Length: 253
Image (cartoon, rainbow, N blue to C red; front, side, top):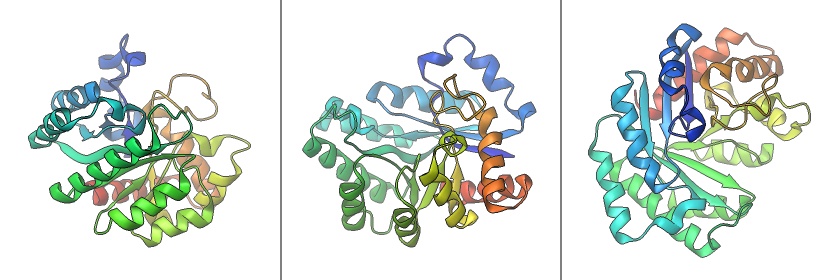
């Protein structure tokens, strides 16, 4: 079944129909979802939701745009959430130089602190990197030794994807691969072994064609899988089977 490795179902865009939508997932072929926090406030929400829905797990971490909310007290409080059941990863964490909401030094500081936390807890990491390719790779090489995880919503070159695969990381591919002009990620999907690819939505964002621009959800992963199958000249079923196996391996489920 479909394994959505990166979703944000605590987002307010789901407030009107969240329960109804999530209860329909099994009939739509979606077997597992990892719900990922981004802000400090969302950490508690994703952990609570994982207790409510049997097919859902949680990842706890602070997105680079939100690290202004972190200090020693809030970091310690966030760390306590990892004692709860069904928290399977640290994320999403990383660097974002596109929005530049927080200083680069602050982003780097809390990225490294959260990588250290993942080492301490022996959990995989979900890495967000936008327009920060060189700094992300440098920090990952220096600080992420021994960690597993995924470079989520991968947006860089085929060569950089291969570099991360060599380091033992997975490449997260979502709706962008279906966009007509998304040459780079199509090249990555073609070049990277299927055994190193994870499917994700990043919902409610980045809906695939034919829903581009609309609210995304886990049911639409089938369009991502279909495009990867086309690019690799393999069956849709093989993409779903192998990426689910990859996700279970990374999240140790």
